Amino acid sequence: MRGKDKIREAILNSLRECIKEAFQLSQERVPVITGNLKRSGNEIDIENGAQLYYLIFYSSFVERGVKAHIETVNGYYRGDGIYVKAFTRNMPERMPKEFIKSSMINSFENFSSKFDFHLRNRFKKVVKKI
Image (cartoon, rainbow, N blue to C red; front, side):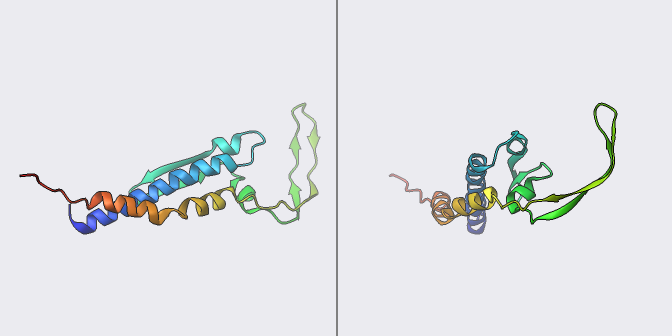
């Protein structure tokens, strides 16, 4: 393996290690009401890196927060068959939780030491005993 390939592999391994750590931290920090948001999270290795994600549709609203706004609800039938007309409602501001952002920041604070470890592993000298 050439030197630049070893460096690339050390960077990739360090990155993936940070993402795994960030995911574990985010799972500890994610707000839990029903558990759906927490269960929707995952981290995977991809060809040139790694991904940390939460798939449930409101994950971005929890992470980034929502400004106060007026929301329009379309008409719908309740479970007992009664029709509810469309209406508007005031939605309060929701502060950002930043459970993903804070986890990423904390995890990547140690990136250089992880990179150093993986780099040293790739460039170990082999001393042959005679």
